Length: 70
Image 1 (tube, one colour):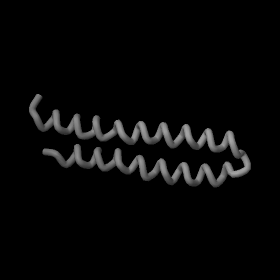
Image 2 (cartoon, rainbow, N blue to C red; image 1 turned 90 degrees about the horizontal axis):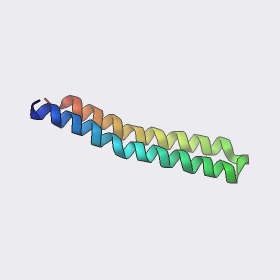
Image 3 (tube, one colour; image 1 turned 180 degrees about the horizontal axis):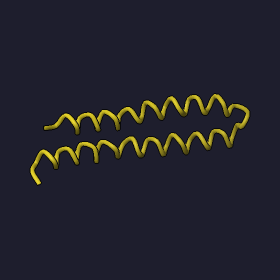
Image 4 (cartoon, helix red, strand yellow; image 1 turned 30 degrees about the vertical axis):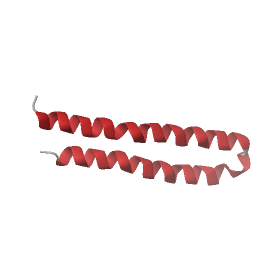
């Protein structure tokens, strides 16, 4: 195994840790918010999906970087 393969693996591996934690926090807080105020479920869901999309973009950046490393 050469160093470029190791760099690719580390780029996507470490790059996915942050978004994974972030998605868990976003989902947990959204469930808490709906539990406290069920009347605004639609608004909370919209904001949650938007936050998840931005968080997932970071993982996609890590994937792109791991594909660019040659």
